[in-house]
Image (cartoon, rainbow, N blue to C red; front, side, top):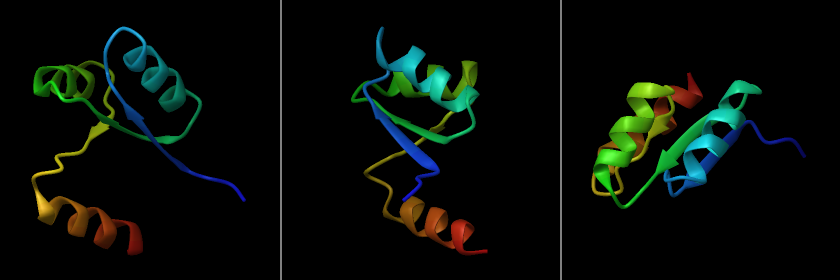
Length: 68
């Protein structure tokens, strides 16, 4: 079994470099942090995708985009 997506929970001093590395080696990388500023910073600086658990439509959009 081979996975193509990785979710890094916690985008602080440890999680952000891990997310960056995982993305650089070719995985579809998502990040989540309780601090919205950390998620925005990760998205802006290294380009990872972020998840908003309060947006139910986001999961529907991601599912639709992955099925196309």
